Image 1 (cartoon, rainbow, N blue to C red):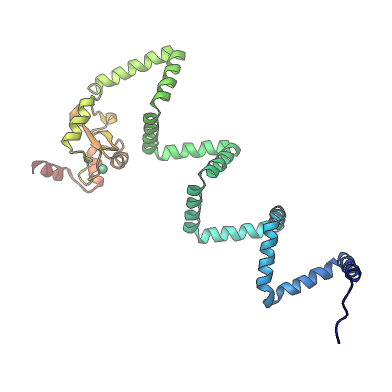
Image 2 (tube, rainbow, N blue to C red; image 1 turned 180 degrees about the vertical axis):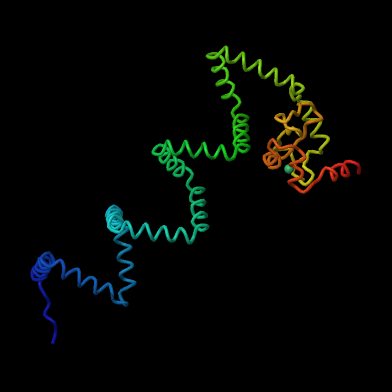
Length: 268
Ligand SMILES: [Zn+2]
């Protein structure tokens, strides 16, 4: 028996009835939809439909996510913390990659965090500089080197505002220089570069110092060393940062080298 074809009017009436029924029975609609979704054969269709809906309704999706998060905050946070504790290296790597790929967002994010946590930020910076004094000094030195003009202007401004303090500073510097045999001369660096063949002076290190170098006081100024050429050597940044202001014998001993070995080394 052929199916009776419905007229457009009949179809419209039917659709209206269906809409009314759906509006009046939201729970039943939900149950029917859930049952449909739970069937294995609908999984792929369901996934595609959900993806299409998400793509078409980004704002609603975001709001839904926020609602879900607000409702399940504790369990989500706990699950995240658990995953983080179990996958620290992976998390760090992911974070590192994200920071590298999103430098602008990363800057904005840390600026926002800093603005919110000024005190904590200050305390953290202070603790870090205290624990990494040598690295901190080197960073400042490198920054000053890269921003000479800015440093000059700042210094000039400070000198103009603090003439007495500037005089005292100058006096103290002269005292220091007199005590340590004057300033390091430019020719000294060239001489040492030549003498060391452009290689770090540490016995165990063969790093080139042609691009990046630190002029090191073999006996630190703090321990009574001077600026005379005999007391200078050129080290690669890594060696110099690990040496810091240690006594030269202590630094060598750290690397398993005794003074007797140094004497022997110098004789051959
Ligand atoms: Zn070195």
